Structure formats: structure tokens, C-alpha cells
Image 1 (cartoon, helix red, strand yellow):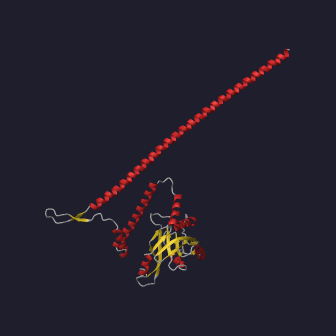
Image 2 (cartoon, helix red, strand yellow):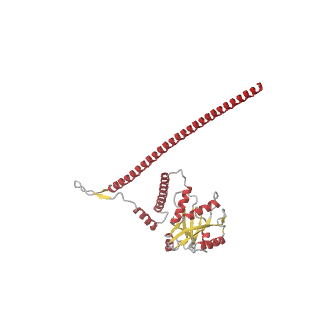
Image 3 (tube, helix red, strand yellow):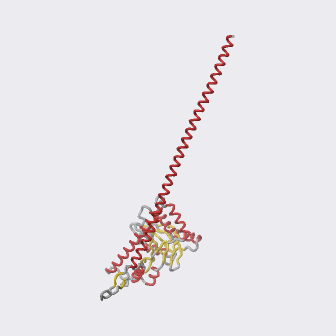
Length: 358
């Protein structure tokens, strides 16, 4: 178990907030350095640490190499870390070095040694593992803090990582920038309805995975493979308390001397079903209206295109007739000119012939 429960709980209860800019930077770092390989990339996290909340707002890449066969052999350029930290400090003094990241996707054997190196710059560095190629729907980040672990047999303490929850959150200005970036890379052929359905499907898949993890944990607790953790069970109970109680017990009046027995009260379930059906009917009607409007626009566009095509054909026909008439007029004019020229030539010949006779 961890060395001091208070320290461990304080770390677990911390809220780690990661900005989308950090995820984009890590993905770009991985795409430039290790895409298509089994290597991982390492970098530094910048932000603010208030003790209860850790906000990661920026990051930068760090030259890093490690031996794939021997995890204990690795190299990290700490001189580069110090120079970049000083440069970022001049740009924004509020952003301090709060930890480091790597592309994982899981913890490695050398992570504790690298974490000890970052203790030169911050007392309790944060480790964020960013899954750049996620296979499951959910948050692609895992946050960890290093703690001392005391063995039950009284042997020497050892270092281990404790997981802390993390969320993805952006400030208003950054959210606008990310939205514009996603708008540029979004598939134009995909409609708004399909995008919403895809988003809801991914949310349901993420919920399914979380429920599966909860079920596996509870099953291991029942099988005595894991100890009972009252903090986790309390959190689960808080989640279940948020669910609506659709089967509240009710007492029926006595009938022919029978004793009172609780029966299932379906009033709340019926009311909720009616409300849900009303909402779905409104959505269905709005979808029908949207489809009818789209068909109306399609018909209007076809009519306009046909009218435009007929006007173009009429215009081309008029131009062809005008060109033909002009050609005939030119031909007639050329014929008249040729006749006059021939008549003048005949007159000149007759005149010359008369002069010779004299």
C-alpha cells in the first residue's frame, strides 16, 4: 500500500486539466518523429499547479532515445529542457514546468527513472501518457504521480505511480481556434445529422466501456482478488443515486380482508415514457419537416435548372438564326456587287469595240 494514505488521497483527488493544444502538439510530435515505428516520444508539460488543480496549457518536444532491448538505457537532453524552459518563461511567466509526457500507450519500466530526472525542475512532476493511436473511445490521456510504497513485510520502500483523473478542457479563445481547425479537416460530405449520430454512438461506446470496467472491478472484489475500497464504492453509489428510480414501491388498499402488500408503482415510469415519446415525436416531426423542405428546395432547383437550360437553348437558336440571316445577307450583297462589276465590264468591252470600228 502507499506510504501515507493522506498524501496518496491528496494526489488522487487532484484534478488534472489538459488543453487541446497539448494533444495537438503531442500528436504532431509523434507524427514527425515516430510514426510507423514502435518508438515513443517524450516532451515537457507547462502550466499551473495550484496544489489541488493542475492545468496543462502548453508543451514542447524533447530529444529522447532509448534502447528497445534494454529499458534501463535511455537518453534525455536535459540541457535542451533547461534552455527551452527559460525561453518559455520569458514568453509567459505563469506557465511553469509541471511535468512531462510520453506517447505510451502504457507505463514503461524506465518511467520512474525519467520522473526522478524531472524532479530537478519541479518537486512532484506530473506524468501524462497520451495515446496518439487510441483503439477505444474515451479520453486519450492518463495522468500519474509518483509516490512511495511501503511493503507489508517491512522491506525497503519503493516508488510507484498512482493514477489520477484527467479531463480535456479548453479556454474560450483556444476552443474557438480548435473548432476552426476541426472545421477545416472535417469531411464536407458528412452531414450534421450523421455527425451527431456518430458522436452519440461514440459516447454510448465510451459509457459501455466504463460500465464494463466497473463490472470487472466489482467482480474481482467479490472474488477476493482485490481488497474492498470504500472510496471507490462510495463514488459508485453516488453515480447510481443520480439514476431515476422508476420502480418506487407503493401500497395497495386492502381487498376483501387481504393484507397490504407492496406493488410496483408504474406511474413514474409511465410519465417518463410519455415525456420521452413526446420528445421523440417532436424530433420525428422536425426531421420530416426538414426532409420536406429539402425536397422542396430540390424541386425548385430542378425547375430553375430546366428553365435556365431552355433559355440557353433558345438563346443559342436565336444566335444561330441571326448568324444564318447575316450570312445570307452577305451572300446576296456579294452577288449584287459581282453583277454590277460584270455589267460595267461588258459596257467597257462594248465601248472599246465601238472605238475599233470607227
